[in-house]
Length: 235
Image (cartoon, rainbow, N blue to C red):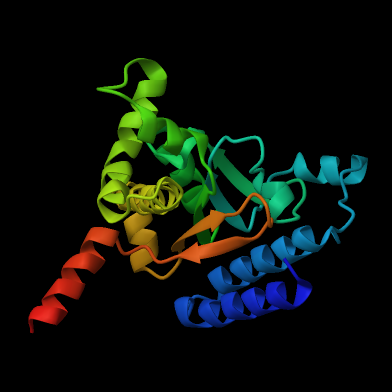
């Protein structure tokens, strides 16, 4: 990606942030940190992190991360690296396929309620192996990995209806999975109340392996958009 195109993307993200975060200055500041850090990562201009003894000793007194990130366990998608952050900066919850179940959701609740992070990012990524495994699964997947795939299956079903091209289907499924995870996260009373009180913003995003960039995702479902489109045409 050219630096000029990357700057256009960053400018667009900043513009979106201003719209999305009206009335949530803490959340806006957190997202700006992520955008700026991701830009440094994309250009290979990452800052030197303080991970020396003084910083470690300081962190023994407690932690004050500025964001909670739910991401896939994929080794290529380490939030601290792709957002160019250091020790104590990000409260990270990682699980294959960035799906949630009670213990995962409990970890998120700890980050947003007890550590008071004003922003929660649900981060999917390009070419997600868990999503591809769900696409390729035959019958009902079993075992513990099967439990992850079952969570992803609804996103795969939506994606297959939307596109016949395997590459496009995979990317749609990745984004639909982020949207479904968002719906699951919003079932948490704690998360809902913090959002309602204006103390928390929840966003979805996708990370692109090759370019190193992340982009925000419209959390409206594909099916809902299709229904709205058909209603508009019928009107």
